[in-house]
Length: 493
Ligand SMILES: Cc1cc2nc3c(=O)[nH]c(=O)nc-3n(C[C@H](O)[C@H](O)[C@H](O)COP(=O)(O)OP(=O)(O)OC[C@H]3O[C@@H](n4cnc5c(N)ncnc54)[C@H](O)[C@@H]3O)c2cc1C
Image 1 (cartoon, protein in one colour):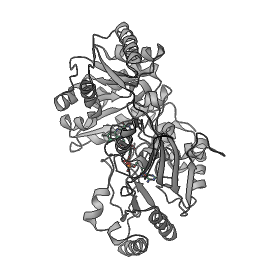
Image 2 (cartoon, rainbow, N blue to C red):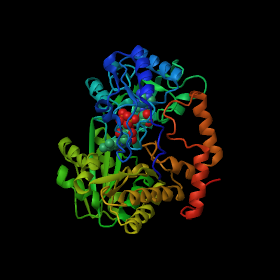
Image 3 (cartoon, rainbow, N blue to C red):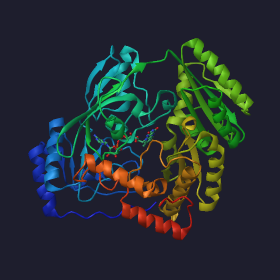
Image 4 (tube, helix red, strand yellow):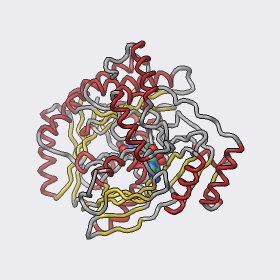
């Protein structure tokens, strides 16, 4: 991966003009332009890349979003939409001569309709807040990113976020029924709706996962599902990573779709245990967390079947949560793995790639070999059931060369994912982080088609430009670089 190209710096005169235009669209307290106010917006969760925005706009209503977009369109100012800024691929990283448009203040739950099993929410509503609001009806919103306490539904829509329970219940795209958004022309557009299917092309599916490049989300209609009466989780230990990885494929091959199927290697378990006291087996080379939910009898039967498959696959120990407190404790380590990385390393770089489940063992061994090659440690904690890897590359940015080695390490992991038939992202998006890897994953013709879709929504090319979709020039430069370095076999022409 390469650092994003430096943006054009803005002039004081340009900033004054943009602030003046935005102040006609928003109350003064919703327009930030002094450095001490804009500094908190300089990066998202991918903190290695930072850039101060020219101005930050904080609309409080949809009408204000419309007015901001119209003002930016008139002045040709690029716009970076932002939710809570927890994204891990730099999707919300500012552009120097652009504005950040945060929808975090639009955080009202508009309606919870228990009969229709839907909730209508503003874009800045936190993921977890939806389930909290639906709980009194015995309902919840299923996709549960580990960041759910902070991340917003608009960010989830833009990234097509996943989580521990998405193996059984689907990703954001499977749980969102409608999106209301504002186009770059200031037009309010409704995609999808309250019914299961909508007439015309399925533009909702195109929009979900589009990383803030097609429109600004102002309202989302999500599905709610009944909270299962019982949930229990198995913690299975393995003395060998390969056996643990193969057990994942065996569980699915046995016809079981667990509510969650997560894997942590020894580095990860040892990283989180002192922090979370989750009760993990820190002597195991790998542990699997396999959840079952449903009616009590169903859960008992499924836990029995999963335990049998795990034992046949070589599990050395199996513990099953006996009550809700213990289940939450088992999950606490997994859910807090990323913050726990900060305890053992000054910096970490979280990768996100997806591979066919049956290739898990091979890829984990490949990553282990890369640890020696790049002389950096890597902790693996991931959505194993989905084949969605999250290698955390540990490094110290203060030591010369370490960040560069971490970037190369990450790039080689993604190359391996594509080589075994997988993809360069599972749920964290492309952003700026993986924009070069897009050139490896897709042919020039495919990238040109993506650019065509972007152009159809955003004729002005002002919404989150230079994120997620590389330019054809960038792909050409990437192809030449890789051909010279001989690193990848699969660069597409
Ligand atoms: C500790 C930690 C754990 C995480 N765990 C998971 C996980 O389990 N699964 C997972 O999928 N992700 C995970 N993430 C990544 C991140 O939380 C998700 O990508 C989340 O959806 C981002 O939401 P956000 O509100 O923070 O969006 P931001 O980071 O602010 O923005 C993300 C993208 O959404 C766009 N966007 C934001 N608001 C709007 C809007 N109103 N209209 C249009 N576009 C918009 C931005 O331009 C950007 O491209 C994790 C992150 C952290 C830090």
